[in-house]
Amino acid sequence: MKNAQGPGPRRFGRPGGWQQADVPDASDAAEWFAGRLPDDWFTGPATVEVDREEIVVVGELPPVESAESGSEAAIEGRISRFRETTRGDRMRIADEAERRYGRKVAWGVSLDDHKTLFTHLAVPVMTRLRQPERKVLDTLVDAGVARSRSDALMWTVRLAGQHSEQWLAELREAMAKVDELRADGPQI
Image (cartoon, rainbow, N blue to C red; front, top):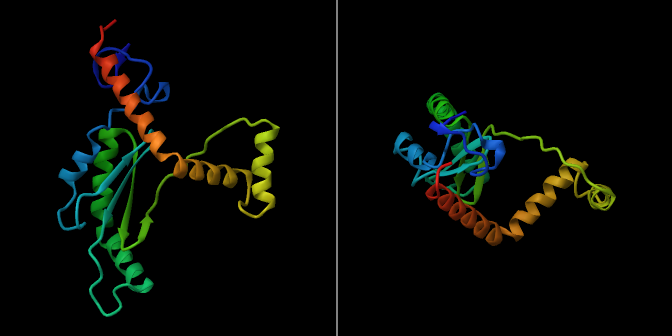
């Protein structure tokens, strides 16, 4: 079998596990967007995050310069203006990136302490839970913390991510090192 990235045998295993066997490599996505985005959109380089299904590009907007610069209305207005005036260009750039990387592209902006994501994916995830885990989710629903088991699961994943970010970063670094070693090893 041929590899989606070029000639040679198809590689199984990471990066990304078996689910990404046919997804193009997106390790250069941040550099590609840095070269492709107009210089006047953001105050600095955009943040580019990639997963199996989506690339999310978020840039910092210039501050609102008026008497009401920090007001909610001024911030919402600036974000809305950016979204509308850049829509055509963002769509063209997203189409190029989607062809190149085989993933959908979502956009977002940050301004002061506000972060707004425009249309982005909410990907369904199937899991099987035993009664003790279901009870945790049902407690969150019964307490009004979440509207459904699905919302409760999303809430717990976010909470776990916040409290384990350092460990997850170390795990990602270790996986990258394993990928490097695997690439340097003998080709079978």
